[in-house]
Length: 213
Image (cartoon, rainbow, N blue to C red):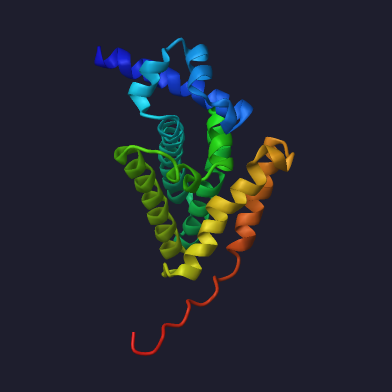
């Protein structure tokens, strides 16, 4: 029974993801999801607690899958690089282009991740475990950014991390989002070139600490 219920909930999340990607957040209503999935309103509320909880669960499932893929791609890029310097750059490029790879099999999921931030979801009516899951994913991304920054420049201060975050979060959101009106191959090529361009020079110096700290 446990397996069947997990499978059914996964299918419900698939339907919710499709509604969200195709019609925006406003299209995701419990009634619309019930009609699309064949699962009762009550069962949906029981599983997710609220509409906000449902949407947070949809987003965290996609974000977790993307982070897993990113792990794999980053490690492969490092392993294939000829030297540590090239490996550091290749790892950031792999992390940045991971959403493009993810979009091949999960276009709706990639679209959500490129257009919706966890800040919007954290403001919702969430159960503690749903909020914790979102925060855990945020922490994981932050740790990854700090690790990439350290590998690149031997530092993980705010200025250095901001450069890596621009590469792996902001540039993909700008170039891979459908509103950019770029075909997938062009968007990916421009993204890789942009990331390599950003990494061609060092990050700004770390901010000075006040005296006595």
